[in-house]
Image 1 (tube, rainbow, N blue to C red):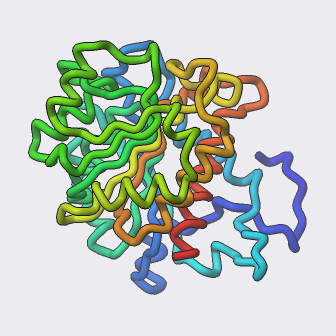
Image 2 (image 1 turned 180 degrees about the vertical axis):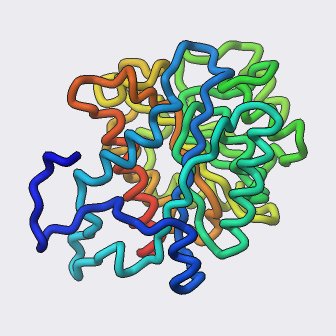
Length: 300
């Protein structure tokens, strides 16, 4: 991003101090960015491990300013820290490191925003945050057997998350199997189809989701699987399809979720930065999801 024009009156997002430097300065952290570049168990070939760095780079294309009125400078409104990346977060040892890092950031009061990586990141991030509820923005049920980016919801349930406190938003036709749909329904998960999302105001939909997911102790984890979006805006998501959500619809849902004080952690996953369009539209959308999470937090 060295070619970006420099204007002292136009600050850029993403220039956040490290978590260590923030601790040295005050100890307070409202929001912590953490790279969780999972990719080794992906069901499709992916370069998702390159995405956290790409999202950080893309953030500098944007300003941390909400128009208002009144205008809000997110850097002034929030103590934001970048906690770096977890090296090799896949596997038992990697997931343990993710859980420890998230738990430490949560102990400082931070909303943790994990930059994936594929959807396997959801398991250790939600567990590290000790979330008692889960809301997913995803075209897929993530109920597969085994251990992969297609199994995080099933794994969380098997590890003790109460499925009565899980809401899956954006579940799409032609993207799931009858067996896994039956599994989700037998668990008692609340499913909101893509068609239902289009028929309801985002704020009402998210409020209802958080009432369900937030009924358990420990707060709510938000899984933002960008492949819930239309392929025209998310070509860098291997599983995105024509007919998904618009970029605007995703951003609105994300900001609404972040405005709920029960949100304790979030992940942004399933973006393969190495397979994006030339204009980097998918990575840029992921970066905007980071900013929408910050905006929702600041506006609470």
